[in-house]
Length: 168
Image (tube, rainbow, N blue to C red; front, side, top):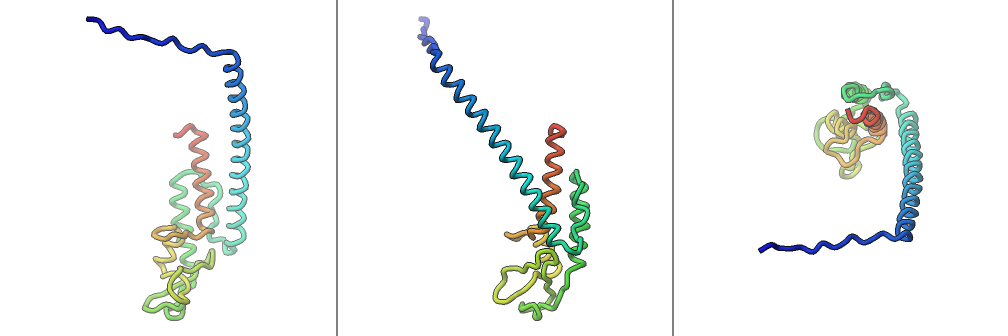
């Protein structure tokens, strides 16, 4: 016994429906172009803001060399060198002098002049590990904004290069 299926005939597209879809497609294409322009403008503004942050806050030139890096190996090498320069520029002081109990040293971030959100009047970061984590954004909710500005500008350039090269 053969089973037969009924196949419905596709609905015919009326000219009015077609024209309506065509107008909607044109509207969406226009909106897409506008959003792409807005996005490029915002990306440009963000890049200029990052550059301004670095120029205004890094008065010692600790982040020099962040411009022109275009691959991951360069980024890793720059991070290591910049981290060493920032840690060497720090002014570590005894924990008690920085309002913390215990032993060891603490230092303000030489870039953002920031401190950990510790109890009481504790200033600076445990030196050197706490300051290193602050700079790299490891195990902390707030990465140093100045270091992050340079880091993210490099990452943006690397991603743009990869996209231009077709994902290589």
